[in-house]
Structures are given as C-alpha cells and as structure tokens.
Length: 196
View: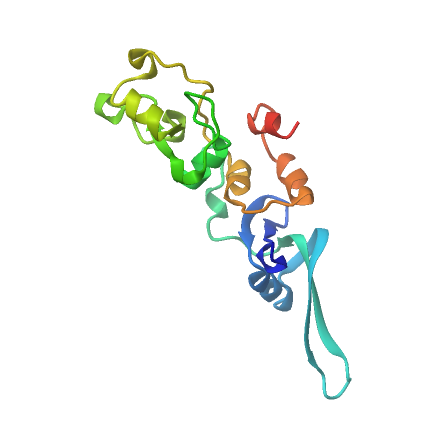
C-alpha cells in the first residue's frame, strides 16, 4: 500500500464527520490555517522550502483526523432526516459484500443491486428497499419479492446515517478513524456488530 493513499477524515469543529480528504487537500487546510484541531495519528510529514531570511524549512504534519472551523457546503443538510445518496459501492460495503440471499461474500464486480420490493411492483430505489445480491440470486429472484421467489432475506436493509455513510465512503479506514466514526453511529446500528 502506498502511504499517499491514506485518507484524512475531516470533521467540523464540533466533531461531526464530514468527508474524506487526500493529503494535498488536508495540507491546504493546514496552510490556510483552517484546521481548528487535529487528532488521531500523524499520517504525513510534508516538508516545504527553506526560508531565505530565517533558514527554517516549512513543515506540515497531517493527522488522520482534522477538524475545520468553516462550514462544509453540505453540512447544513445533515439533520436527522438526512438521507445519503444511494450508490452501489456504499451499498455493497453496507452489506459487507455479502449476497443477502445466499449469504456468500463476493467481489464488487460480482454483486448487483436488488430491489426487495421490485420496481415493477411499485418498489422504490431507496436504501430501505435495496440489498446486495449476487447476480445468480438476483436473476433467480427476477421481478418478484423474496416471498414470491421462495427466497429468504438474511438482513433487513437500512438507511445509513451521515456518519455511517462517511465510513462507507472510506477506502482504507484506519483504527483511530474507525473508533472516531463508531462513536457517531447510532446505538442500534447494524454496523456495530461488524466491529465487535
């Protein structure tokens, strides 16, 4: 793994998780003095040029979690009624890359989005109506409900909160970032079981 692939978790000043940043964007926030505080482990030590007058080299230490003072453009919408955008990578990660019909784990390319109540029967493309399914199970179920197809759904689909969605968007979540995010998950979150 290349060290530059590690992501920085950005929060607002109150500690609400907002998004993942690359090290360049995080360094820019440090340089612009927009970081209120940082926590977690140091990820990068970036060295710049040498000041001609003082002879000192500029240095930025980028931590795994940084809090910024300014408002994120979308953070006003992070209310209790917030629904994150539905996409297959986050859906497959929510379901731990399992087919929720046969229970086997699959690669991303071998999974598909299944509508528990099919669109042809009035179902909607919502987090609470979609699950990860292997292509074989999805084809077998076709335009039927699980009951009509004689299939059992192994877990109830749920809509992730914003903090859960931030986790689902992360590529390689470090342990200190995971602990920070877990503290923002609802107590009844199915994701807690995954990390027990």
